[in-house]
Image 1 (cartoon, rainbow, N blue to C red):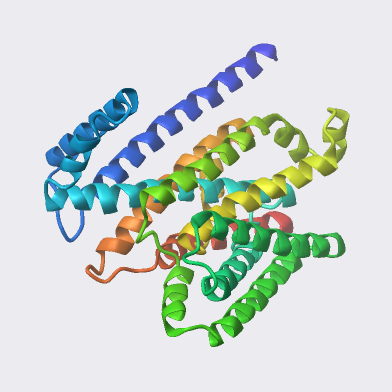
Image 2: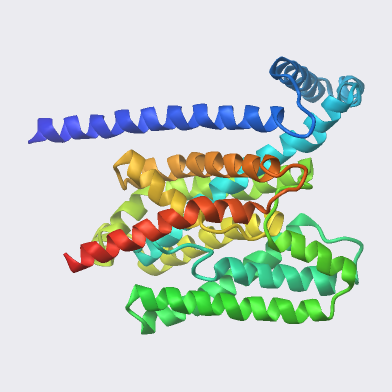
Length: 368
């Protein structure tokens, strides 16, 4: 029996390694395609040469205290291609990767919390709550200060996420049927959407256009400041989730078992909600509400891993979410170029069928 368990563990580890290597390869491919393909095509060789020079000057800048700043600025301004690469495409693809991975991990944490694979920030109305607070901030606060920072939007989205999460949690104690809880989440999302639309009525035309474009979900306009903010907020959140792998494994087996393992349930549940809300809030604040990624990608990850072990699922879900969003962003940019689709439109096309399949499969399992 011990030998069989050891063989099973090694088999899972080997599969995890293969999946991670494959996802890394797909992510590199997706990033190269995103950098190369667009209204201005840049040769792959030129892309790698400019990136190598940029890294060389950037590292030299760090170790020499700014000694290579002029060279780096000259490289960026040396041609139209280099300006497009360093000012538009690289920041966009990095932001897309970080936020796509963060949204996937956020969805996974919610699925663990509610013990249901259909739970997610978009379906439960959490993204709508974040959107509502961000919309109110953009419409009413922007008029009193010169510009709204990314951190301000993240804080507003975080508060909105927590408000809606609290409402959903309140109903979760009264409604034991997950289907009814999903209906509650959808209705709460509609209420948040109505509040947002009401606020738009009193907004200036310029704010309405910006808010409409943002609310559809987009990575256009990404900057290095956005990338730095996303990395500073999301990567620690994902690492914290990874450090909670063992408590999550115990919690998945039941609260009684988790308590017997020495886990304090209430603080642990609060931590799960805070991490999930923080990750989804970063995504909503910096890219707008993006649908179905938080539900579909964790399910896809568990399916390809053939394991529900959190230590495997969390890093794989992050990579899988990054790959999924980068490819969706590529489709959004190029299919109808120069017109750009909303990223939420593309993720819905590919994510919704996965959710439908999950619901049908779950219904058949319940009936069987």
